[in-house]
Image (cartoon, rainbow, N blue to C red; front, side, top):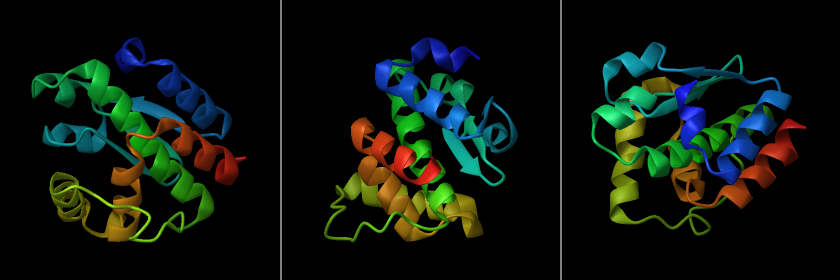
Length: 140
């Protein structure tokens, strides 16, 4: 899996935790064919990184692959919990760009993710230590 080459220590720890939590890690499958998605996580414990899309769109893979791992790991923790993590809107302030990302994700995934779940994921995607805390809390 090519994406492993781009992971920093936090990304590697999260992937290790997800594998231990029985998530199946995939690269460039399914929704990745739309050329827009950077990753997705769905039942039954499928975790996907769309490395080709990140690179094809000209984004820095060292940054965006790690950020995508963090973002999708939040969704994995939500799957383990069976719902959103419980962070309130006040606890998850987002920039206008990230709010637009939430809306875009909701439109792209239709009935697969709630606004609350996406908001948590976008808020936490640059906080790998907090993401790991939630993965370990809800998936172990």
